[in-house]
Length: 436
Ligand SMILES: Cc1cc2nc3c(=O)[nH]c(=O)nc-3n(C[C@H](O)[C@H](O)[C@H](O)COP(=O)(O)OP(=O)(O)OC[C@H]3O[C@@H](n4cnc5c(N)ncnc54)[C@H](O)[C@@H]3O)c2cc1C
Image 1 (cartoon, protein in one colour):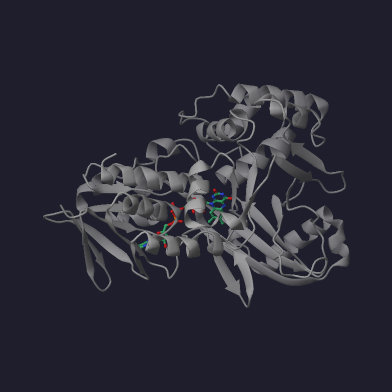
Image 2 (image 1 turned 180 degrees about the vertical axis):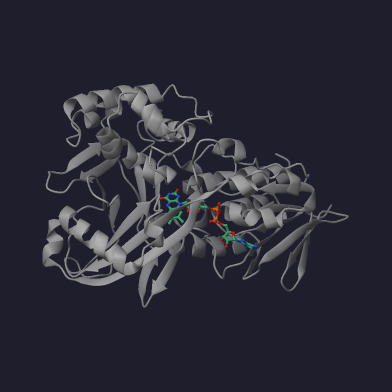
């Protein structure tokens, strides 16, 4: 019998993972990607010799599918995983605080960090500890209510929400706690922080994202025998006598099975007619933006690999100085702004006006440094909008049409829109078209 022909549409982490799984199982796989590169929403750009990631991407030790993908494609050398969760939290005019896990088993591994957390009052720290224990009992499947309302009902002050809970909610859910889905928030805290002591150790991409994901993935896919069609835009998918026809701008590809691994805003147009009437996500699933500022200072200003900020419009700052820059000279600081609804509409000059003074307050050494370069990267639809009700909208990998599966960080993975969710969705979709 000839091998099954699988066509994967979309070359982000979901599509890459699905294509590799199918090739490993002996399928004849073609992956089409509209852009000239793989990596999807996680990529780097070159601005006159300056390699910038479109956004700072962080992962956790518990992101096992994503970490396995990096191992598989040979991208792991460009990432770094903390031996022990540690987040430095900066506050203008105050001493730094450090949230570091201890050596006790979960959830007691966080008790010391919370009790010493100087950006909350002692009473707020105790209340935060109680709420952390209570989150363990929230059903992550529930689809009603915001995390913010739940925190208030569990005795969290506005300051505790801003100075503690949002430090986790914003980067993982791309929304502040006040708006985020309670179920998804509970999932993040349970999976990342409360169920196992080492789960939340933080992984950073040190090399440019394209060197970690897109470029090695292209090599690995070719090695695995996958046909890679870059700059190939799928325009429609139709059921045919045997399998499916995927129509592009120039030609039509035929396959026994199709895995649709494009962002949700693009997916509806690529559904075969038979599935169009049952896609509530097409209208319902909205997006949340992320903005990153990239600044080269003439001298070192940030002494940490990354740090969070409170009492500041800044959220997280990262040291992204390339290793080949002479030590102690310039420093490249990236500022990541999640849930950036206001910032997405701001011009670069407005962003400079608001954020360079905020950086001066947070990092006093910037007072003696020149800003040598400043750039902005914007992602309007960085993630789906993780609000209450979102769970019901996320489609499963399997569809009503045998042989047609969906993948993508936005599909029903239990995870928020993350690299891990994307990798898991790719495995799930491959399992659907290959029969388990
Ligand atoms: C700025 C930013 C910061 C982020 N930070 C983090 C983070 O810290 N940690 C984390 O885990 N996640 C983070 N994410 C989310 C993470 O990047 C995504 O969840 C993940 O990369 C999505 O992968 P995907 O394969 O599902 O979709 P995508 O990466 O969007 O891939 C879909 C692919 O389909 C292609 N495509 C679309 N239409 C067509 C068509 N018609 N024909 C062919 N190809 C098509 C697209 O070009 C794209 O390459 C961040 C995202 C952004 C944008």
